[in-house]
Length: 305
Image 1: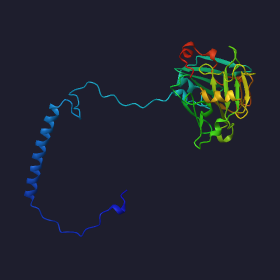
Image 2: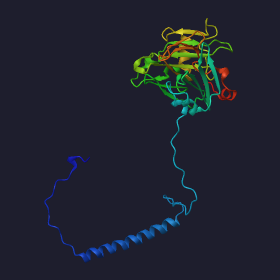
Image 3: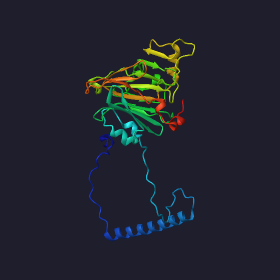
Image 4: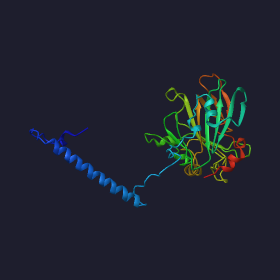
């Protein structure tokens, strides 16, 4: 839009000046002649200058110039709870393993692996995803997730104490309840879990989320060996011991999980889920892939930051 102040003031109209047609045609012919000669000179100069600032196109080419492509988002990052499990299959292919849930055999937990990503999917009897978890072991990837609370969680890029960012700048989002249950044995899950402050409710689609560290590709020794009960802590960030707080400031989260319905964390690090539309509790669900279920090539490529 033009600024009215920038317009030139109107001038009084002047009678048009008559110009003979012959003069006009003669002037046009002169301009065309001069322009043609100028183009001829420029073309000769370009042809004689191999390092011209404006390169000449190749005389012939059998293949067109490659088109620019935009980065493709990892398909596993586009799956959410409430989606049909077919969405995970489309993103990562067939699951590499499937296990029935004890006490709820009509439910199943499926494991998908795609490159540096591994996903755990809890599937309901009607093939709907009730828990969806993504584990990443490559620090250069740093995937981000939009939570049901419309915050942003980024894995591997920042310490877990600052992994969740809110558009309002609410740093308190990172003061989550901690369920740090490393276990310390080969059969233990070795998963440190932090639970979202915003619990499932109608305003967030009755979904919650977890952020955590899986020892498949991250350090889970959060307290010094000399500390009593150094393999377990359940409580708030405010009550956590100093060595655990230091651990949170140096160690990034490497998995994110979205959960449909109410849920609770068990003493062994598994999750009990009560989907709002199922009327039952599904017990002993994995928050992220179990290290012993992951293939050797995936673990070989994992890098602990």
